[in-house]
Image (cartoon, rainbow, N blue to C red; front, side, top):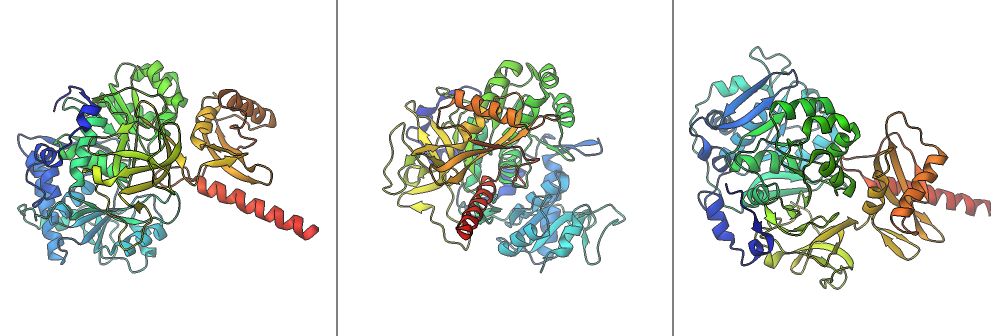
Length: 560
C-alpha cells in the first residue's frame, strides 16, 4: 500500500471505475463475495485479522485463516436452518470474535448482515428486524433479554459458554452449534449490485429508514481508507466507532479487512482511562472516531497531551462537523493533524480532508469531493449548481460519480433524487478553493431577521469557551425575528449555569461571529438528546421550542 501522496484533483480527473475495481479487489463485479474479499484472500502466513480487547481486561488475536474456518461453520449452520443467499441475518452483539464470525459467515453464504446497536431497546430492535424481515438474530447472554419484548422475533442464536449458561429455551448455543459444522464452505458468488449489508439511518431527523448496501460499495470503502484515513500497512489503526452503526461497520471492520489489515476491537465501557490504556498498549498511530470522543480527550487536557504527543500520525473525524477548536487543540497539544470527513449511512464518505491526497487545507471546511464522486451545492428549487459563497443543498452528481452506490430506501419512497442529483438534505457552501463547508441540516438552518445562520458556527464558537463541553443550537420561533438563536450548553463538571455565565457566553459568541449570529437565549440542561450513535438530535430541541411557543400563543389568545 503506497504512502505517497497524490494530488486530489489529479486523482479525480478521468476516474476509471473498472480499473479501480481491478486494482482494489480480486475478481470482478459479476462475481463477488464479501467474505472472500474481507477474509479468504488474506488467509495466509498467519496474517492477523482481529485483535480483541475484552471488558474484563483479557485480550486475544485471531488470524484470517481462523476466521475463514469459523465463518464456514456459521455458513453451514445458516444453510441448515434454511437461510439462503439474499436473506437477512441480524446481529445484536458486542464487539468481539462472535460478531466478526457472524458478519463473515453471513456474507460467505451470500446472505445480508444487519447490525443492531447493543444500546437499542426492544422497540428499536423490533422496528428494524420486522422492517428488514430478518431470518435469524444472533445475540449474547447480556443482550438476550431485550428480545423477549420483540413482537414476532425471528429465531435466536445466543453466544454463551460451553455449558449454555443464560440460554433461553429454544435458543441455539452459538459456539456449540458451530463446533458441529464443517470448516469448508465455498463462498456463494453474487454480483456487485447485490446487497451484503442491510442498514438503517440513524434517526437524526425522524424514523430510521432501511437501505441496502451493494457489494460494489466495498471498493468505495477501500478508497476511503487509503485516500482519506491514510491507512498504511505499518499503521496501528483504531476506529473507535461502534459497528452497530455505519461508520464502525463500514470503516472499522469492512474497510480494513478488505485490505487485509488487522482490526482492533475494544469491548466494554468506553471512557477516557480505557481509551488511553488501549492507545498506549497498541501504540496507536492512526485514530478515527466522532467529535464527541475528541472533545472528551480535550476536556482531559494535559493528561491526554502528556501521553499522546508525538504518537499519533493522523486522526480522522466523522459523524458530525468537526469544530475548528478541536483541530487547533490536536495540532497544538498532540502535534497531530485531525481531518474532518463527511458522509452518510446512505453513501459512505464522499467529502473529506484527505490525509493521503494533496490539497489545500481550509480550516472549518468538510473537505473536497473524494475521487469517484462529484459533490456540488445546489439551489433546491431550480437544481442549479451554485457558485462559491452561496449556501444551498449539498448534493452528489450521480452521472459523474461512478463510486456512488445508494439506490434509495428499501420499500420506501424518497424525495432525495432529483434529476441527475442525490440531495443529502444538508446545507453547505462552496468555497473559492474548491472545498465545501458544512452549514447544517437543511431543517436546522436558522432564519433570523432575514439572515440564515448555521448552528455549526454558533456551536463552534461556544465550544471555544473553556467552560463549555457540548453545545446544540436551534431556532426558536419569534414573532419579530421569525426565529431567534437558542443554545443548549453542557458545562464542565462542577460548573453552574448562571445568568452571568449565560451573558458571558452570549458576548463570547457575538465577538467571534456577528451581531445577528449569537444566542439570545441560553439554557443549561443536564444532557442533550442524542441518537444511540451519539449525534445530537436538534430536531427534538427545536420541536420542544415550537411546542412551547404554540402553547404560549394559545394562552395569550385565550386571555384576550
